[in-house]
Amino acid sequence: MDATAEHADLRREVQRLQAENARLSRLLELRGQDTAPSPEQQLSAPVSAPGMVTMSSPVADKLALFADRFRARTDVYAVRWENTRTGASGWSPAVAGGWRKGMDRRSAIHLPRTPQVVAAHLVGDVFMGLYPLLPRNTRQFVVADFDGATAMLDALAYVKAAWASAVPAALEISQSGRGAHVWIFFTEVLPAATARAVGTALLHEAMVLRGSMDLRSYDRLFPNQDVLPDGGFGNLIAAPLYGRRRREEGLTTFLDLGTLEPYEDQWAFLSTLDRLSPGDAERLARNAKRSTTGTDVATISRSAATRVHPALPAVVHAELGAGLNLDTGQLTAAGRDRR
Image 1 (cartoon, rainbow, N blue to C red):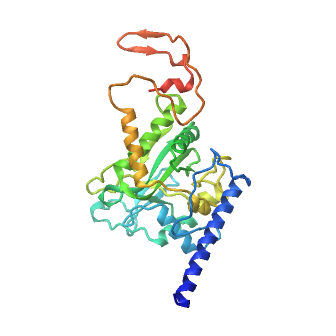
Image 2: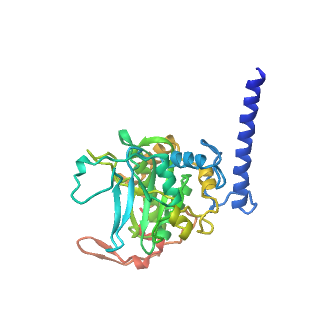
Image 3: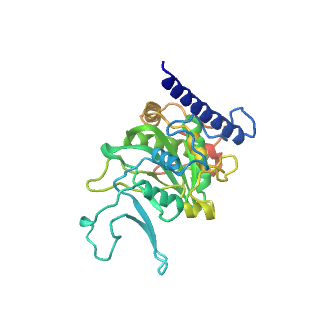
C-alpha cells in the first residue's frame, strides 16, 4: 500500500471513530450518563451516511441529512399558504409564477424540490410539504398523524407499540401544536403497501394499549395510498423543522420521549435514530396479517407492548339483541379492545 492510499484509509478511520464517539456521547447525554437500555430512549444505531450531523455542522451536511431521511419526490413539492384577510390556509403544489385565479392546472409548470427550497424551509422563508409516494409505488418512510385533544397520548401509545416491536420511531409535534406525527424511516425504499402494513399493524397494537375501539385523534397514514393515482402526486405531509415554527414556538420538532421537550440538537437526533430494514418491515407486516385475520380464533391475546395486564372482571353483564352488547365501563382499559 502506498503512502497516499494509507493516508486516505487512516483519515477515513479517524472520521469513523469521531462519528462513533459523537454518537456515544450523545446517547450518554440523553441517558444522563446511564448506559443501561431505557424504554424512554429512542432506538439508536451507528451513524450512517451522510455521517454524524449536529447543529454546528455545515449547511451542506444538514441539507444532505434532510434529503436522506425525508426522501420524497423531488420533481414537485407543496407550499403552505395563508390568507390573512379571511383566515383561510392550505397547501398547494409549487408552480412557476404561483397560483393565479382562473389558472389552468393542466398547464401549470411544477417547481422541483431543490436544496435551495429545503434551505428556505429550514430558515423559515417557505413552509414546504413533501409528497412521499415515489415512482413504482415505493416510499422510504411512513408517518402516522394524530390530532385533537388526545393526540399526544395516542401518539405515545403508537410509539410504545413501535418500540415493543423493535421499530425505531420518532415523535414530532405538528405545526399547530395540537397534533403529533410519528415517523418511521426505512433503510431503503420498499413497496408502499408494505410500509402501510407496518403502520397499520402498529396502529392496531396502539388501540389495544389505549383500551378503546378507535384512536379518536388518529387521522391517517402518510401517504395514505398504496398506488400513485393517475396524474396525481399522492397526499402530502408537512416537512418537519420548519424554521419559523421551530425557532419561535418549538413546533415541527422531534421530542425527547422522556421529557416531551424538543431535542436540543435535532440534527444529532436524526443522525443517531435507527431505521427499519425492508426485511424486518416485511416480517412485521406478515406476522401482523397472520395475527389479525382468520376465523379460527380460540383464545384472547394480550398486548406484547406492555407488562401491565390487569385481570378482567369475573362477571361481565351483556345484553342480547341483534348482537351482543357489552358495557365497556365494566372492563379495564386494556380489556376493551382485546382480540
